[in-house]
Every structure is written in structure tokens, then in C-alpha cells.
Length: 411
Ligand code: ADP
Ligand code: ASP
Ligand code: MG
Image: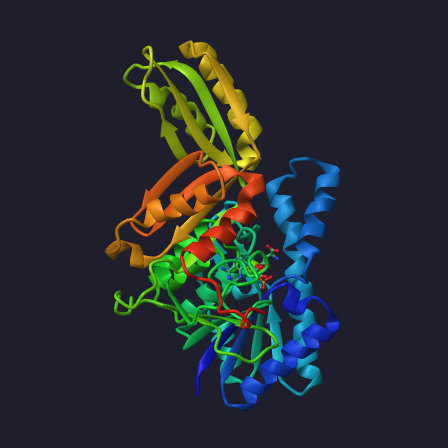
């Protein structure tokens, strides 16, 4: 008998029929003798609908109140799923994050889980009940409702699995595992049987939305066996593993991630003196704007150009700050660009292979795609390109690194 935490995402609980299908699935596991804790998201589209409602009142809704509201999406699905389970004779009980208690810090909209009281859940499991927990939410030490950031139900699932020392955390979604890249963008993407935590962490932080970054961090930190599976199709899914198997057998690249969430800011004609990077980025970081990639050009005529990327939501703010810095330090001009995208190749196999980056650049050059910025780490190479070439770039790289599914097997 195993203790399993199962998380079902928004599409998987997107209608009453689907919720009943989820109940039938949970019942099967339980009939097998397993103890089950289910974490659910809001019905698909619901979180967006709630956020839109708030935006009709204000562009920047008060974070505490926004959390009170968006957390209701999950409250609806836990109750519906518990009802559906009881209807098929499975004793079940639902809990909000507050009721469990899932303790978080007070960072509304991006709260971190600090600790989970699992007594209620253990007691219910012992009494033979299936426990249904609302994803994405918690409570701070003042009793305020908090939420964990978009995609946060994944993190609730993994954190509960860690707290309960579950045998496995299963993330059920609308694809049958983690693919070499988003299968909705590249038809020839292939499901991976396994991927390491390290690679999954890079994929998630570089834009693959299949798992929330914090969920992967948590699972790695607490060694939670984690698997991504399709909600309604049988299959082995993808196991996220701790061990790197024999790296000779590893493909060089495991996956390709991309995102359209960034924007580029450039300050030109900056007097090239010591401390200039700090003068430019200091005010940006003081305004809590996170910087991702940074490039400083070689000085020419004692002036230089300095470019960096920020989240698109921070673009306007970043632009204003940079314009005032430019006046202060006597730079020539500030330019910005939101039509960019970042494409990254990820793989632990890179450690033992040289020339991976140049192979990437060659593939992009063949498609005449201009690279604007580059950044590398031990297991990834990222480039910034013009947004309109994003899909072409991802497909070209998928082919160049031999990730395409053999003809006839693509879904
Ligand atoms: P859920 O609502 O179940 O949490 P998400 O939409 O958050 O589902 O995540 C699943 C989606 O992630 C898939 O529909 C797919 O389009 C996208 N995705 C992006 N990159 C990948 C990848 N490498 N492998 C699988 N799915 C991916
Ligand atoms: N409902 C939340 C969202 O849409 C959390 C989740 O689905 O994981 O982001
Ligand atoms: Mg998700």
C-alpha cells in the first residue's frame, strides 16, 4: 500500500464531467489499496477570469484582496471533487490551504510555503478518507490568505508529498509527460521517459510551463519522487530523477525551452568608466526589477553600449528608470524592444561535449535568424532573438540536435 499525492491541473478539472472522470480515477487507485491525497487547480480559465474581474476595478489590485479572490477558484473544485467522490462511495473531505494549514510567508501573489501541518490529513487518511486539498494557496502568520504564483498548484502537490513523506507525487495534466519541447509548438517533440531535476529546473525557469519552478525545487530538495502524467490516458509519463544515468548515453540536449515574457533595454553611448554597470543596474534592482541577461559591448571612443533584459511586466518601469540614469551619467540614448524571445537548449550532456553552443548558432544562422544576446551556464545555452522567429528557431534547433520523433510516430 502506497501513499500517493495526485495533482490535477485546470484542464483536467475543467468541467463537471471531467471532475467526475477524475473521481473515477482516484477511486481506482483507492480500490487498489493506496492512500490518496488529491490537489486540484481551479477549473481552466477561472483564475484568469477572476484576475480580469479585479482589473476592472483597478490596474493594480490590492495584493491581499486579489489573493482572497483568486483563491476561490480552487475552493470550488475541491468541493466539487469531494462531492463527486462521495457520489461514487469514496469517503472524501476537502480542505482549503488555510484549513490544512499550509503556512506561507506574506508575499501575496508569490508566497513561499514555509511549513505544513499535516495532522488533519493524516487523521483523515487513517479513517479511510481521500483528502482533497486546494492548490495554489496558503495562509500567512497573520491569517491572511496567500497564493503561490501562477502554476502554484504543482508546488502545493509536491510540498504536501514532502510533508507526508508520500511514495510519489503524480502531476496529472493535459499532456502525457515532459517533452523535448512544448508539443503544442513542435509536432515532432518527443516524450521523455526521464529527466533530471537539474534539467527540469532549467526547463521550468527558462519558460516550459509544464511544472512550476518551485515545485521542481521542492521535489529536488526533499527528494520527492515526481512524475508527470496525462490525466485521462494510460502511460508511464515522465519521471523526474535525481541520478544522472551514464552520461555517455545521455543525449547532449534533453530539451528546448522558450519564453516570450522578456523585454530588452539598451543604454547607448555610456562613458566607459569603472562602476558604470553598477550605476546602470543599481537603480533597476532597487526598484525590485529583476534583470536576466546582460551584455556590455567593447568600448569604442571611450563610450560603450549596455543591454539587459527584464520581465515584460517591468518594461515600462525599467525604461523610465534607465532614462533618468542616462541623463545623470550623460549617456547618449536609451532604446527598448519588447518584440524579443528567449530560446534555450538544456542538457546535462553538455558537460561532456564541446561545441554545443556553436552547433546551436550554426542552426540559427542557417535559418538567417539573428542572435541579439547570448548567455550560457554549465547545462544550458540561451539566446535572445526577434520574437517573430521564435517557432522557426525552436523547430530548427529541435531538428539540429536530433530530437525530432522518427517519421510516423509524431502525434
Ligand atoms: P495544468 O493546467 O495541468 O497545470 P499547464 O498548462 O500548466 O497544465 O501545463 C501543461 C502544458 O505545458 C502543456 O499543455 C504544454 O503545452 C506545456 N508545455 C510547455 N513545455 C512543455 C514540455 N517541454 N513538455 C510538455 N508540456 C509542455
Ligand atoms: N489556478 C492557478 C493558476 O491558474 C494555479 C494552478 O493552476 O496551478 O495559475
Ligand atoms: Mg500548470
